[in-house]
Amino acid sequence: MPQIPLQTARLDLIPLTDEHLAEEIALDADPDVTHYVWGRPRTREEVLASHAQRMERGRQIDGLGFWAGFARDEPGRPFVGWWILGPLHGPDQGDWRTSPGVAELGYRLHRRFWRQGFASEGSRELLRHGFEELGLHRVIAQAVTDNMGSRAVMESVGMRFVRSWDEPDGEVEYAVTRHAWFSRHLS
Ligand SMILES: CC(C)(COP(=O)(O)OP(=O)(O)OC[C@H]1O[C@@H](n2cnc3c(N)ncnc32)[C@H](O)[C@@H]1OP(=O)(O)O)[C@@H](O)C(=O)NCCC(=O)NCCS
Image 1 (cartoon, rainbow, N blue to C red):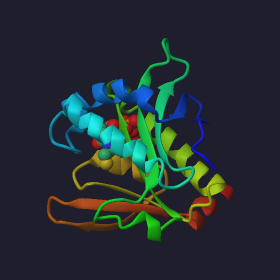
Image 2: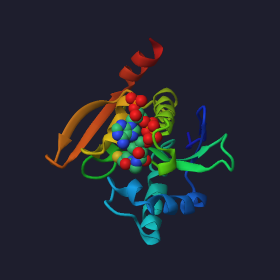
Image 3: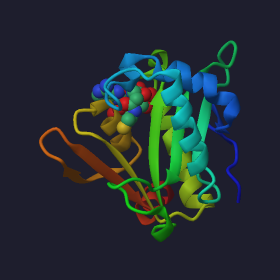
Image 4: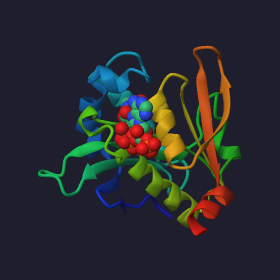
């Protein structure tokens, strides 16, 4: 199943393409947005490289990848940010080839949309899609320990703390299983 467009009450979630590159560059130019990710804003060239990696991750497992989110009912249908429900990657997550039923959830939003429920709204839809339509059995999310906003989103969508590493300034991982998701949403 290829990656498909999704909708929530307020968001159109569109599979990321090269057409969204300018939005990604503008997003990463804000130091507040990148504070807990890179510690500084990112240059156009750096975002170009990230965009290529995002597109590559979108090709690894059918149905998984990045989505660009747009606020459907706001004038001009502005870009809110991006979400990922993607294959595992990197040394802290393991190899996606050996964990096909496990995915990583993530999000990065423009500051003007923070604290309005957008990150959790998009995340809930990606979890629903992942468990109900893609047959995932577990979704994880990771953040630096101090990123309380990101951790609050994880809690808000039903993920639970699993582990931390690189203490004291390290990272945390949260997760939700297919079983927990269905227990929560069918009860
Ligand atoms: C982290 C981020 C995605 C949160 O997005 P958001 O749209 O403001 O989050 P929501 O409005 O959906 O909030 C969900 C919950 O988190 C809480 N929350 C959001 N930001 C918070 C913060 N900075 N501190 C504490 N709690 C926070 C909300 O109050 C809400 O709690 P509730 O469910 O109990 O009501 C956003 O701040 C962002 O894009 N930050 C920069 C990029 C980033 O750090 N991404 C994550 C990398 S791991």
